[in-house]
Image (cartoon, rainbow, N blue to C red; front, side, top):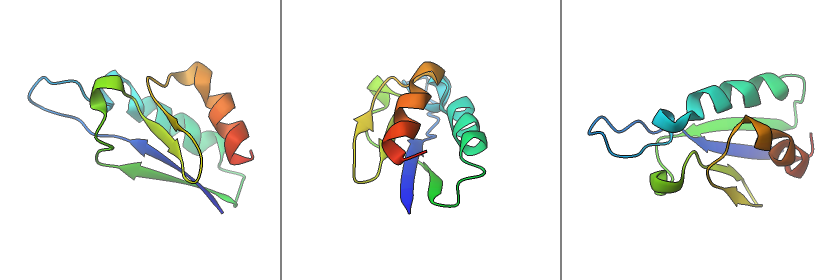
Length: 82
């Protein structure tokens, strides 16, 4: 089973965070895109330690993507085998 992890950290202090940069919409899009694929698991992480370059998405066992937007999701899904 492939796992795609996405940071959904929201810092309330006004510092950069993945959630403030759109990761919540990205995780919803990933969940919808993989709904029919039992071999893909999407997990939400509280922090990947790189919010300055977020949103961050990691294909476990593969690449870590920074500054992810909706246009990048097909590339990420392809790497995960969708």
